[in-house]
Image (cartoon, rainbow over the protein chains, first blue to last red):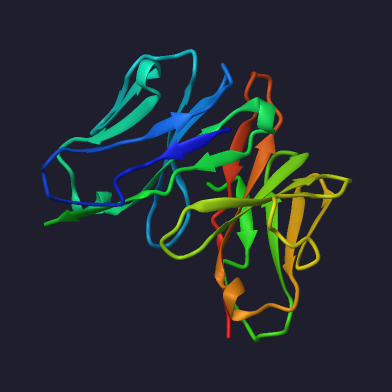
Length: 115
Length: 118
C-alpha cells in the first residue's frame, strides 16, 4: 500500500536559517511520482515540484532544493536562507498510475519562520 | 492562472441543509476528478474519484448518500454535502486529471472550498 510519512509535525526556524523537511514514502510500484506542495493559511495547494521514480537527480530551484534517494525511499526538501514568507504547511505526496493518479499525502509539516 | 476552479471558496450553511461545491477544469477536459477533505491541522484524504458519465468511486468510510458527486460533463464535477452537520465542516479540495501525451497525466488542484456548518 502507498504511504507517505512526514515525521516532523512542526518546525520553527529563525529567518535566514536553512531547514530540511523530511519525507519518507512506501510503494510497491516501480513507476510513481513524488510531489511537494505548499499550503498557506488560505488553503490552496501551491505546487512546488514533481519527480518521477526514474529520475533521481537532485533539483534546485532558487532557495529550494530536493534530495531524492530511492535507496532510502526519501524525498527531502530543503529551504535555504528561509524567509518569513516560507511559513506554511508543506505536504509531500505520492501518486502512481496503478491507483488512477490519486494522491497520497503525508500529514504535513508546519513551518514557522521567525523574523 | 488557475486551471481548475472551485466555487464557492467559502460557504456557511445551517445544519440540516445541503450545499453544493463545484469543481471546473477551465481549459482542458477532465474525465477524472478527485475530491479530498482536510480537517483542521490534518492531512488531505481522498473522498472519492469522480468519473465523467459514470458513478463516483468512494473511499472506504465515506458515505455516498451524504456526499453526492456528479460529473456530468468533461469540465465540471460537483460535490453536494446533503443534510450537513457541524462535523462536516472542513476544507474540501478537488483535483482534475488532464489527459496528456506523457506517461503521467497531469493533475491540477483547485483552490479549495471552506465549508462551515452552523
